[in-house]
Amino acid sequence: MKSLFRFLTWLLLFAPILAGAQQVHVLSESVEFSGDIGSSQRKTVILQNESNQTKSYFLKNIRGSIGSSQKVKICLNDQCFDSKRDLAKIALKLAPGEIFTDLYLEFDMGIAETRGSFDLFFVNAENIRETFVVEARYEVASGTSTDFLHKDITLSEIYPNPSNRIAQLDYELVNDKAKAKITINSFIGNPIAEYELDPTRNSLVINVTDFQPGVYFYTLFIDNKNVVTKKLQVKK
Image (cartoon, rainbow, N blue to C red; front, side):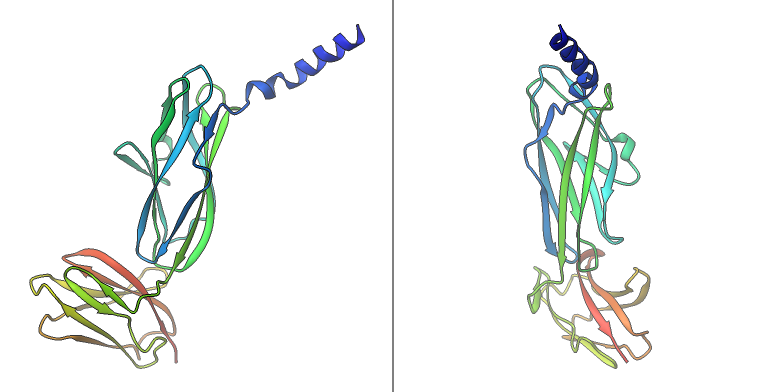
């Protein structure tokens, strides 16, 4: 009799926990993003509804560290949402036993070397105790190649770097009809200068004597499209 009483007591205490047990699992484990400054990547998140019921979830919040220049978009099929502005719009439905492959994360590496992680917390619309978490990590590097190759242009690294007077970029416009320019921004993204690349020349000389000491980022635009961003350090 005492054993039966203890069993019923245990069942009453732990029934809410059992009711909230995770029934949707993330099969893709941790999502990894690794790339150079200025690049972007898209990764698939694979989910499985292991229950015999249809499950509806919404994205409750995102926890962790995302750099100020990095951007995350969450895509369902062909529709993408901003992770900051569109949080309430991100919802998905999984049929019983379904393996769901139409959830994607798009990560913009931004303009600074950094690393970090963040988690997406999804909550069952009908039972808030039932959740699943998508874990993501990222690492942004400055790149190792000496020249940047594009179908319209070849662009060297800026030199000397660090610089205290003059910084120079060498380039060759393969397509002389392409409109190419270099913009320079401060570490926090404020515009500092802009230079059109002359197709009749093969170098750009930048006077940095008026720049405050610190880290800047120079971006190549071709036909008004952001192609690549790299780092310039100015010292006195």
